[in-house]
Amino acid sequence: MASAHTLIVEPDDGRTAVLQALNAATKTIDLTIYELSDPQIMAALESAQSRKAALRVLYNWNSFTTRMRQTDITPAIQKLTQAGIQCKPAPATFEVTHEKAFVIDGSTAIVMSFNLTSPYFGQTRDFGIITTVPAEVAEVAAVFEADWANQSITPKVPSLVWSPVNSSAKLTALIAGAKHTLNIYCEELDDPGTLGAMVAAAKRGVQVRFIAAVLSGGGKVNGNARGVTYLQHGGVDAVCKSFLYIHAKMALTDFGTANAQAFIGSENYTCVSLTKNRECGIIVTDAAILQRLNSIYASDWAQASVSVAADDTPLTPCNADASAPVSPTTPPARPKPKAKPATAASQTKTRRGR
Image 1: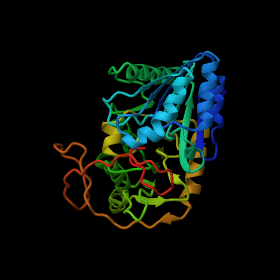
Image 2: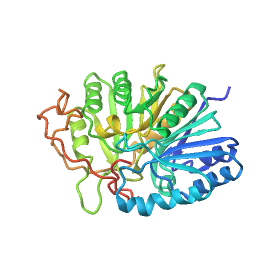
Image 3: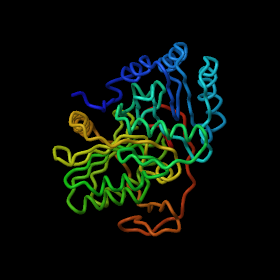
């Protein structure tokens, strides 16, 4: 029997799976996206609209700089609008609308870690899941409707992970549930709650490995050094790699056991991603998907790591008034200003909030 979930791996799989799904649409396409400009994806959306499918695009706007709005966002939205596609900026309720998800014909959803711009199909390590599970599709659709109408919603499907509603709790539970192995990719890391759960897992004997992005460019300090150092001090085998830009957000637990599962989504292990943004992820248990993820992780782990200068600056609690694990050896620091999203697509450029 065919699986209800299909894995997309970037850059290996390219645009094929996404284009096939869009080209098969006959009724509706709803898209929530952070960045959109890839010519082939844009053409597929316009083609679907010309087939009389009803299209809606909910796009991030509020967190972008004026320059990025003018150069990266507005031209794409104007082009889609001219094709008859309904487009709307996402609610200002969220600090960033960082979700990347399609609902197609009410029967298929695609939950992605990658944006729909050209570099994500050739220069980044990223993942996506296509789901036809009715409850999962229905909830992605329901959240889209709520956000489109700027209304609140409380998602309830256990396999879906949503910020700002339940990402912290679900990802912490996934990490805490690991008994043997935990292999993680994530672009950005500074949340003491989820990182603390990884340290706790390592201390109870779980083999925890973490591949992070090199968040730097132009001679600047690696923005992930603080989180990587924290994990290393706590017994986690944490590294940064740059053979591809590590944009993926994936966690694979206990591969090869009956409890194996994997998370794929848009959530970073950062306070803003987990508690202030609109983000979407999914947890899957399909054997073939877990096998491919494990194989890719093993191959990527074997790639050369980038040297990371130690940074013992304590992690800042997400809630400054709450008691939270911060550092194995140092007290909390004052909150630092949040970095604004950058625009460059090179593998080692800072890409905060993407």
